[in-house]
Image (cartoon, rainbow, N blue to C red; front, side):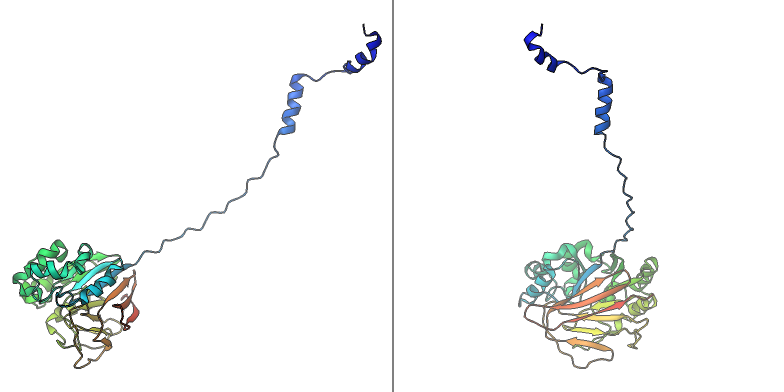
Length: 319
């Protein structure tokens, strides 16, 4: 039938020979598209990283609020700018620590931090019978109202709060209730690093001077290997080198005391600088910021705006 179309028929003719089966064609295609094998890279394990504990921060000052001046507002701004536990070192509000004074004078300033405050009671609070205004205001954070002493842990540190108005709570001797409690508390909390605070300074070059009434507590803390004591009462800032309860320098085992009566109440002078007094200032309101690591501490006195005095350093916990 091709006739004159024979050429066209010749073009359309299939070439002679065996045709590939669908199966064999599929095998060829699959083989052509198969990806070459790729070696899996060896991943080295990451070295383990031990997290560095976050240090605790304690912000301290005493002798704070009065409706007759605005020093406490200036120091409150320093506290407000910093996270941390607030240690009030007594005489939180003048003149008598009454409920009205707490409401009118303390609440608008340092009262803004009541939920993170652990206070120590001072002599002005006891001008209201039983320091009732103080204990009602701070509640459980101030300890039991018939004691006013307590302890807590802050980071890796053990913190002890002493009532230096010790005659109000059973006496001030080594065998009286507070001292017996303190010795037992330190025995039950054998921390590498321990800090204590109260109101009356064992050592002070300021107007009120040193108070031997707290000797029993200093001795107990010294024997337990504590590091730091914070106090107020004198309206000054003063730092002492480590010493024992008799004022003998002891860089290896002694307690370092800071007097921080700089919360805003007023200023006192320094009639007679004591031995072992390393730094003194009588004209600056401010707060002491302590950064507490597991085996050491750093301190910095932070002045209110417009003032330049400061003090900073570091120390190791007793081994």
